[in-house]
Amino acid sequence: MAKKKTPQEDPDEVALLAWCVEVEELFVQAGATRDEAQEHIEEQAEWFTDMFYEGLTPEEAARAALN
Image (cartoon, rainbow, N blue to C red):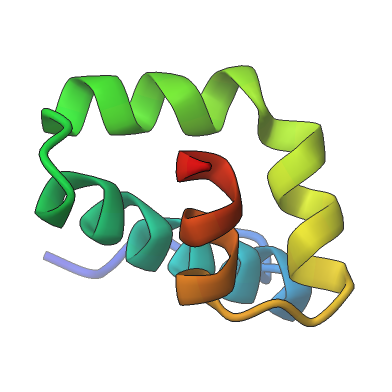
């Protein structure tokens, strides 16, 4: 079966999502459940997006969020 074509993904959006997955993993390592980590990122999406575009690493963003 042929793969269905999808619209081309925005490279910035792909990078942001990958960055958020890394932040999520750091939250889980710090003791949050995966659901808690995802919910927090979703609730604070604008803040995390700003940190991504400001050049923070996932580690720096997770540290800021956990403080």
